[in-house]
Amino acid sequence: MFIIVQVVTNSSLVQPLQSVGTVQSLSFSPTTFITVALYLAALTYFIGVLIYMLPLPFKGLKEWGPTLIKDAIYVTVWISIYNIVLGFAQGILSIIGASWQSYFNSLSFDLAVVGGLYLIFSFLNGGGPATLAKLLGSNATNAANATGIANVSFLNASKGALFAKGIAKALLAIINGSGIIGLLSNLFQDLFFFFLSLFILSLLIYNGAQIFMAFGILLMSIPFRIGRAIGSTFIAVSLTYYVGLPLMPAFDQLMASAIFGGTITSINFGNVFDILFHYGFGGISMIIGYFMIYYLVARVAFIVLLTSIALGLADAIGESGEMPMRIERLI
Image (cartoon, rainbow, N blue to C red; front, side):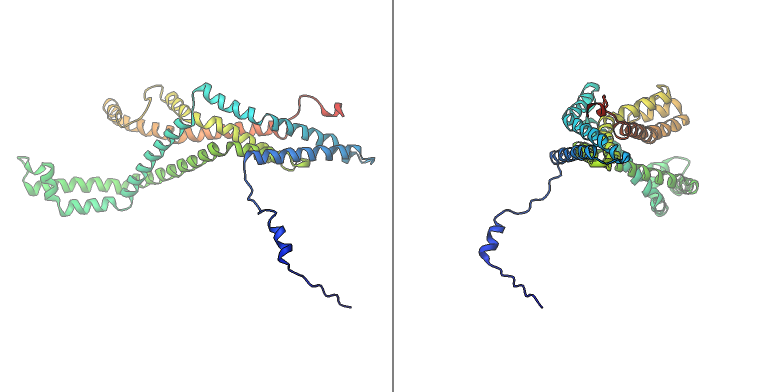
């Protein structure tokens, strides 16, 4: 026996359904995450009460009852102090005198300096010396006349041209043969992408710290501790990096000054020649060393330090985080 089902499309029936409303896109805002986390915390609590009240002699299952109740109360506490914790983080920055605006200004300047040096050494490493040698070789006489070498009494124009050409070839041979330019080009390339990654990370933390923290609370509220570890990591990383990243320039300056013993307090275009004048060739190594420590070593050390603090805080919030009192005594 066959059953024929006829679907009738009546406009009068479809129109009320369309008037119910359109499907709105989800807004990934802290309020949305906190609201869902509150619902999940309530669900976790009732699941814990249900398991705790089950008349079953399964000890492993019964132990989940007070655990889920404790987790629900713990997440509820985090939901309650969400705005307080964010305000506390901003208050720490105000007390120590650090600001995200100053941090972004410093990071943008450093990114521009490293990017400019990368372009210069890439030009020198990728054909710049050859182009310079061609220009000096074909117009050596003009170059000598322009520099005034040909006007020296003991050199005529041809000797001045040969002299300028010889100096240029010697310098280019040193540049090409030593491999220093290629090494510096690769070094500044890595530094540029490191600073670019740091800049993107800073933007994510500055603009999304509230969302990341709320999302971490949401993950922690999932029943049976499914997202507890990753949720606590979101909370810890958001708080640690939001407070810690604006302190990076001060840490870099302090580390560089401590290593050089106050000999060099800063490097800029104005004091480079003063350092070279006072220390000679030793000043070159001091400038390169300060540059490497300030722009690379100190930054990497600070990121490692912040990551270590964030992991420790995540462990305290998540896996080993406990309430001040034992919930089992209250139920």
